[in-house]
Amino acid sequence: MGEGRSPVATPITVAVDAMGGDRAPAAVVAGAVAAARGRDLRVVLVGPETAIREELAQHRADDLPITLLDAPDVVAMAEAPLAALRRKRRASIRVAADLVAQGGAQAVFTAGHTGAAVLTAHATFGVLPGVERPALAVIVPAPRGAAILLDAGANVDCRPDHLERFGVMGAAYATVALNIDRPRVGLLSIGEEAGKGNDLVREAHGLLAAAPVDFIGNLEARDMFAGQADVIVCDGFTGNIALKVGEGLVEAVEQMLREELGAEVVSQVGALLTRRAFARFKQRVDAAEYGGAPLLGVAGLVVVGHGRSTPHAVETGIALAARLAAGGMIGRLGRALERGSGRQAAG
Image 1 (tube, rainbow, N blue to C red):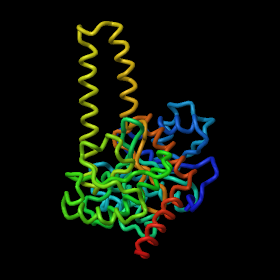
Image 2 (cartoon, one colour; image 1 turned 45 degrees about the vertical axis):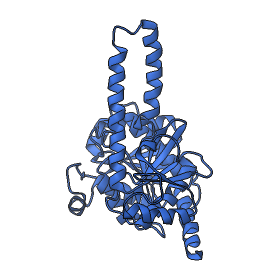
Image 3 (cartoon, rainbow, N blue to C red; image 1 turned 90 degrees about the horizontal axis):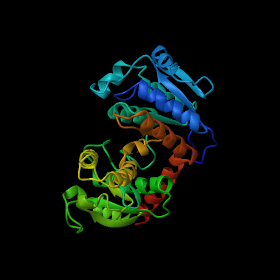
Image 4 (cartoon, helix red, strand yellow; image 1 turned 90 degrees about the vertical axis):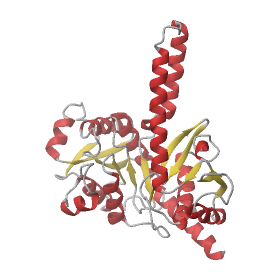
């Protein structure tokens, strides 16, 4: 695979699933054009060539480092991913992953079916030593910076040792994504005490306490966005619900703020200042600013965007994939997992 175990020289090539997402291919192509125009990277748009070429013609992109790779099949959002991938041997997500496996690109970006992305990545790349389950690592806002939540939906059911691996991988990812030398790792539970939570959480607590990470103990859901932890660990079922609740709350707050800004009692000067603050608030909590979630644990770099990704979200997702590839993310994860396995063996 093109990622290797050390940082990769730029420019990075990102294979983009052009048919992934609710707004594909229009939003994906627009985002890819913006990413290629403003950064030192190359893009391969993967999907039905005729449809992508027609969409690309809407942009002034002839001088950009963008190429097309034909993939006639698409896994729709409503399809069962395993059955769809068995039928559709030339699905865009599979062709994009194969390109990385063959060394033609260093990373994959998709805003398509998450289940199809996880299954494809697992089958194409395999997993890193010491990993049984990969995890989606989503960046969430905090008062001073951000935090990483994983798993955000790759695994509905988990064992305690899976959560311990998530903590190790999340800490390694945080050193790259958040530029933190020693990230604080917390375990999402229903109480701060070590004995709180179900069997999964209680057993995972002991494993994380012995892991080679800065484990700070349990976090309650109300503390997810408080900045107490840099890495928040949970199973994929819990993580996906928590993430969607957070997204829904942000959208509701935005709507309420818009209504208040339009109220007659707000003066024109006050409204202008408030709108500026609202714009800054929106930028801090907007998932589009982060672009996507890397699938940690597979031996190839895959970034999964939101199904509703806008062109800006696609642009930032492609940029994230390129940055992680340039920083040797897979190698860093492998070394972190190796240190963790060595510590467990010594214990």
